[in-house]
Image (spheres, rainbow, N blue to C red):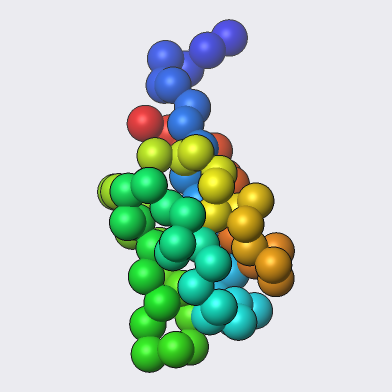
Length: 70
């Protein structure tokens, strides 16, 4: 039985393990990711369209796609 909410995917950065390489920033079509102070990538989930390009590009595999209720 459906709850009526459509499931969409958004990127989530495991900041503690991020190496701040910036690869995700380069491929994001919506500029939803930025690297703060050279420490870790930060995701703006409002801008994220769930394309998954950042997760595929991340060499440290610290970006995962999660389903969120719209």
